[in-house]
Each structure stands twice: as structure tokens, then as C-alpha cells.
Image (cartoon, rainbow, N blue to C red):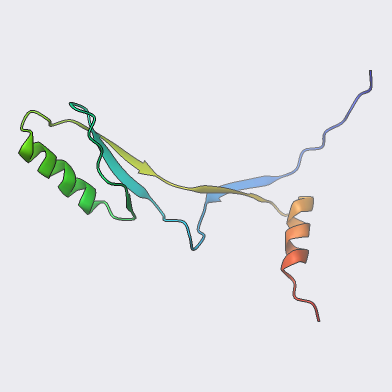
Length: 94
């Protein structure tokens, strides 16, 4: 049997602030019937209005599970070999 050594590398975890990614996606689920609101990127108000209208049409449906999803990205920290590779790949050739 051979032994291996796995070296640790530093990573950072934070919000994914890419152009294609919303900051937060909001939705609700009715706990009475399971109806689900449309998911909305970065806008809570339409989801709140949906819940109020749903209760207006179904007066006994007053409890909802609210979901606010965010996106994260793991990036190599300074000193991590992947950080150095990423920096080299973003440099423009002369």
C-alpha cells in the first residue's frame, strides 16, 4: 500500500456576483394546497402580491413557506495555485 499526501489549498466562499446571476430568487409555497408562486429574480413584491391574491381566492390558505435563494461562488485565494493560473489566463498577450 502506498501513502499519499494531499496538500490543502486556500479557498474563499462568497456571493456570486456574475452578470448572468440574480442576487436573490424569491418564491413562496402555499402550505394548505402546495401551490407555488412564480420565482422572481431580485423582486420580492410580485411574490408577496401572489400570496395575498392566493389567500383572497382561498381564504383558508393563510400560511406560506417563503424561499429566498442566493448563489455562491468558491474562488481560489491568494497563494492557491489555481489563483495564479486564473491570473495568468486573464492577462492579455503583448
